[in-house]
Length: 525
Image (cartoon, rainbow, N blue to C red; front, side, top):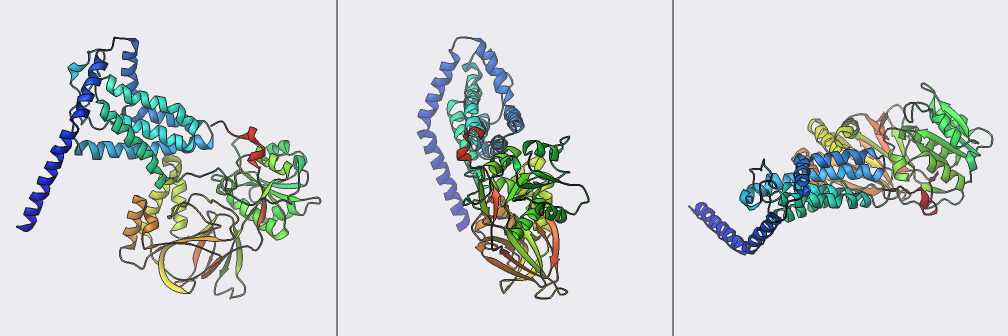
């Protein structure tokens, strides 16, 4: 009987609170009626027909999806990221408005006779009036875009406000519905930062390397060009030769030995710096040669994802031309992996260099799935879905990490600290810390798989006990059930039973343009 009494009391308290809240909101309702009546008394203009068409264009967020396509097609980093964040914010705002608040707070829409027929929307919605889903989506998209590209967001803000007003003008929402919906959209956009963290700048912090040689027009630069990279229909070697006419160009054809061609380029008489045009795998090989020979490195990102180029802050050929010509470079750490097996013994470990990440377990599979899905869904939704899919089928990996025996699902090692926390790291704030980022999911706790999935979906993975994240100067991992494949920079490279990760003793100077000296190169958006 006691639980029933408690339930009845709880219902009574809820009903009492609901009645009180309704009484306190009566002034808001009165104001809503006055505003709607004032709109109904406005003289007829051509704006009436325009707003009817305009408000319909925002049905099911069609207007905003079209705007996202335009922003993505502009080709700038900020507008592409803004489009992704805006669409993600629409999803959160729509869920909050339509699946949560409308069922909880049912409200009648304005009566049809409050506005003249020519101004009223003929196909009136039948769902709850509170809050306005159109307003929520409008401001979610506009603010989401503004978080990445303030100028684009400023251009979208009046459009979002016009959508919110149109819902009152055509008689399907009260003013307070649109105000709350707009606030909900702003909140949803800000909430996206929990899953899609904003980069404070387009390049990571790194200390300047003052001794980098000036290579005007590429004089003294030997550049290896992966002929399978670059834009379709464009000869990357010819394009680089035109921009850097004094550089030595070494073509890497399909089937060529990458390390051999890099060593050939580095041995060219007069070489003062080594260059590479290709993806992250090619850049990692070039970084190894540059570190061995104590040469500065010029990177022309020409792969599919170009994680290293984005972190360094080099996005196109013009930046390479500017930085090499001015002798502007920064110090960048290089990760090092020693792989030992029963056949190599404790002294014969194979050395592998990585510039971004190394991983084993389910993590390489997660990266493959993310790359497969991200063109359709966007990077971070694809990464989250890929991690859930991999965890669902993963097997625990018994191992000994720095002498402590445990069992894990997957392990990630970053060349430098990554942000944000969680198993979907996005970017590096610094490139010269001399530290590794270590992240793994433990499999030796009850319900560890389910905990990880829930933590990922709620954006709280960094706070669960089965997730471990820290920085270290080195990491020693022994695999107790035999060797596993290790992926470095997204490619499966080696397999071993003992893996020792560290940061190379000497950083590699990488050419990067000092943006404070090249303000005319800044993008408009």
